Length: 119
Image 1 (cartoon, helix red, strand yellow):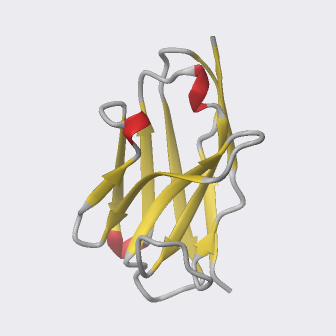
Image 2: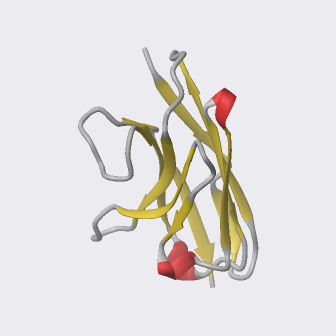
C-alpha cells in the first residue's frame, strides 16, 4: 500500500520559516511529479509547488521567491522550504505524488499537515 507521510507543519509567526517533508513508502516506482497543495478554510485546494524527476519546477505566483521545492528522486521524498511566511499562507498542506502535473485519480495524497502563520 502506497503512503505519503508529511511532517514539518506547525505554528510560526509572520516572517518566519518552516520546512515541510513528504516521504512515500510502499512503492518501488518513481513518482514522476511530486508536489505540495494547500487548502485554506472555505477555499479550494490549490497547487503551491511541484517538481518533476528531471528537476523542473512550478510555483504558484503567491509563493514565488519565498518557497523552494526540492526532492530526492530515488527516495520519492519531497521538501518544501517556506520562508517569509505570511498569514495568508495558513492552510492545510498536502503532499501529492503522481504521473503528471494535473490531478489524476491515480494520484497519491498525504494526510495533510497544518501550517498556521500568526500575524
